[in-house]
Image (cartoon, rainbow, N blue to C red; front, side):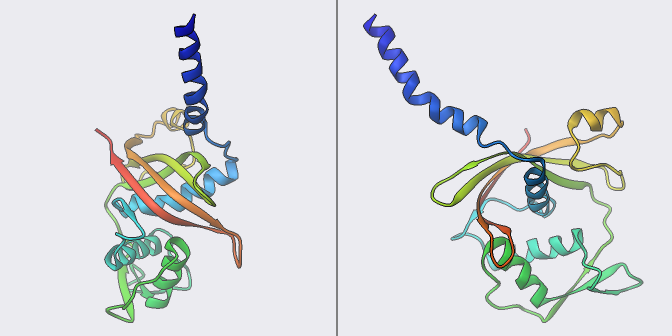
Length: 200
């Protein structure tokens, strides 16, 4: 009986934490979509794990350029028959300040020219869980997917929906991130840490 009581006491101590880490906080469809869109440029840019101490200016620039390629603002100048975009350094700084809470210390040029054309796979992310972290932070976790370039799919659909549509969508890995939510002057998420694990 004493042994059984000890086991029950141990379970009572461990299970609440396990339930929190596994179930997390319910995510509304709107928040899931917002966070999936937030993390998709990380997946497309093949960002490696980092925190605020290890994140370099080179990685900031790499992410921001991919962000502009994925979500090309109509206001950005097109050159080379519309195949390339011109990205001012100020646009890079706006993106990195919003997403990472910091900017590149010194740009090597006033603007960057990047190609919009891509023959690579379409890579995107979906957030699977979100739970409270320490202080005012949140812990997000999700899955990285990819499909052939040119294939039209809904990146917010489910695996079952992709399968019914005959789309060949594969798992590229998993990711997790520590986030902070800022409400003013405009609501947005800022990433503090990021980790990624490739599919085996």
